[in-house]
Length: 127
Image (cartoon, rainbow, N blue to C red; front, top):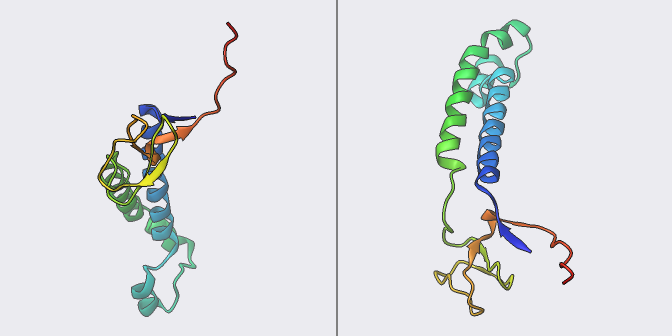
């Protein structure tokens, strides 16, 4: 059945996403010469000298930290069903794209599917 993700799960996703993006930017800054501009300047996309890589660590750390913080605040923030996203009714499990109507014909309420997770129902209790 579909249940809402906990606040801890959403926070973990947000932190991991921001950290991953920051790490990718860091590695790109350390190992590359800056894309097209670096290629024109040096004739190669990648740094070949260890000293060049070590020298670029402080600026790469600064850029990746700023990128990680910006992505944490803006890219991976929690939101409430933007237009065009998939929605699901936790009550009847009917899905649809966001059309502005959040009430389900079954009496439930459509939720953003990114804020939900699937859990296997436990054994029904024997009475």
